[in-house]
Image 1: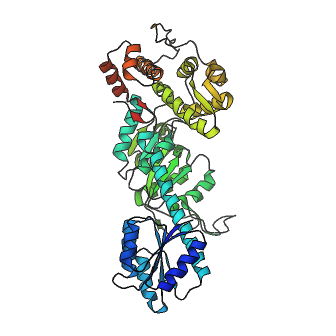
Image 2: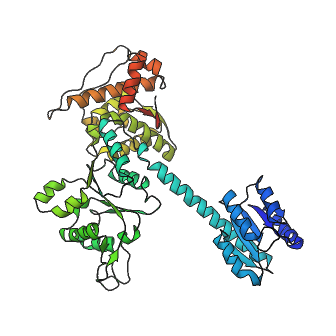
Image 3: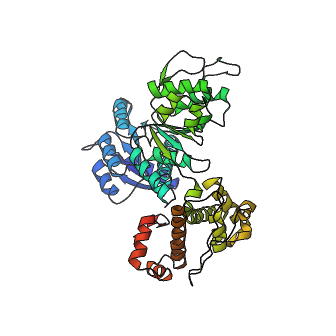
Length: 470
């Protein structure tokens, strides 16, 4: 039920509406003029206002302006006579939802109030959804403390507010679409659509229609006009995933969109202008594809205005403990499980695995482990066979006595700097976890000065649940 204020200088109307709306279960406040109503609004937040248009001193239009300034989420309905409908339209321009002419039926009031309250609720939910999306895709919340991800964050911050074309490069599963969303929701286009198209998932002969739309009768099965994704994304952002798989003929049309901001739907000779930001992504080496004549060189340079390279998970293994904690929390909530964490042995196996599927594979691994475990901590037996089979030795460190067994050198070699960085970050994270993130105790476990540990934490950008540890 709602809180409703009735503002009318006619006593009989105020009393009738108060009795009727109270009977429907609403909480009702009444006022004979705008000034008295504003005094009520200083103490009460209302959902809806029924406002007489013609009142002494302050008319209904002025009251609605004041109402929308003080309580912008409140919905206003104007009550007016037949001779003042033009003024009622002016009141709607001031923020009123609708108007009802006097005399009116109480049932009509009830129906209109119900519709207005539904409109208000939908508006609130849409606002919350936009806020949640923006929070979810803030680039600060993309998980990673490694040097490679730090460079990604820095570049996103620099380019998000520009309108430049972005080319995101990286292996499958590294989070390219998440980064595209972060760019969009941190740009001036964030209030407009973000439309994603997977160019590899749509057959070549259908992708052109999907992107640019078609007119009725343009091909067999085109029984009606269809809007393309570029039209839907107008004023917003279009994310073209796996653009390296796009057919050469379609690449010509894509080049025109980038150069002229226009295109023609399939079967039409009418040019359509479009205002979109293009963010593309691929797991292919486009320079090699250009050399092999599989990708147009001119299109490559148009897309490659700002390249953004996302490192594979095997090159940022110090992020694995943070990602594991994040996904445990996520799937505990989703599956109503109660897994408290992961054993050191299981985590060390995950640190040695190469993760060909990157973050996506890691997320699937944690989801699988939580389904099997349900409570307690994830153990080696809960991990997929691929993770258990692809290890050569334990890289666990026993923090109490300082003894450890180092990982073996893989046949293809490794980056010494990266291995040291991963090992050091993992030790710091283990110490912080074991001490409930108490830096004094963690420094004691690691036999470091507290200031030295704090500097290392800052250098690694180590955070706890999104909160930086200063």
